[in-house]
Length: 64
Length: 398
Figure 1: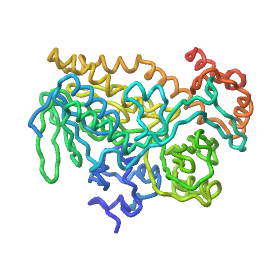
Figure 2 (figure 1 turned 90 degrees about the vertical axis):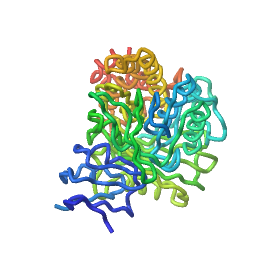
Figure 3 (figure 1 turned 135 degrees about the vertical axis):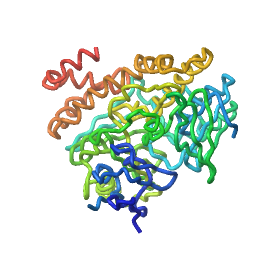
Figure 4 (figure 1 turned 120 degrees about the vertical axis):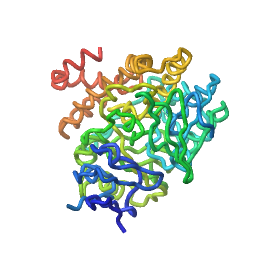
């Protein structure tokens, strides 16, 4: 099951994610954090989609 | 874990490990924390490093050297390739490391020198007193504890979250993150002495695809593309899968790796009161090659050289630590980053036709020394049009 923040905008597909942190480095809000082997998104996320764009494997998805 | 240390190092990659080793060797109390449960894993690296660059920090050891490299091959978009040989043909110019063991060795050396090391331990917030970073809140197996440190070194890698929490904006521009994927492949036909770089907008837009040998029939096959060029159906992994299906259809993938590599300019300031930022977190990756191991170790060592002087003088203010910032910028490493950023900015504008022309022109080059800059200089000499575009840059290269 995908995991999302409280606002539900950013879906993280954990079965696809390689927990590399590429998305974390581009997030303008600092909303993403890589904690060991999983990615977390906080409520500051604006759903801008930059993370979803740069993900090398397509593990992130924005749903408006 | 004690309540306070002279130095707290956040991140157990090569930069953090060299910082911890250097400080512990000088007799300072050091805690190094790594959020992952194992040092060196997962690998997020193509694992290449120059022979002399490595030797500056650690004695080469076959336990963590996968292969020794004698030459590089550049493949143009049209498939024509050129070889880059060292002036001493056949001599070894670089290594492909085994980062799982290499990183572990460096951390082991730090521990041996007296540093405390904690894995699966995360710095979740800075401790800030009167505007000065004084350590971090450390999360370990469900416990949270404030650890005080007179100096904190942020070696927190490409994510660079701790650095950001200290008030330094570490966001990488989308166009300057190399969205990367890599397969460790075996049972493939390769030249085990040669690193191969594939260029072209169809192969790897604004980046390159690499084959770095790890043994007779084993290699890191990977790619980095600009974040700007990444999207559904055309992500790093899609490009890599297409290449592998075509080039190594019968190869076996025994490890899948992904990552992000910054190719932006370094942070405008890599220090704050009580804090020094090193390695990928400081965005000191070489913007042209994407190489970051040496630069992380170099900044890690310099951070401690400056930091321990500041500790001795009981002044870890931003002003006192600026010697570190100036120090690495004025070093050959810092100058190479500044210059290679400009070259990268030009390189990414080149069409496939232009890339073909350049590699064709460079095929016959007999380089006196094996370096990126020697190649660039030769290419410019042979391509007057490119040279005209880059007149200012050429002047800065000298």
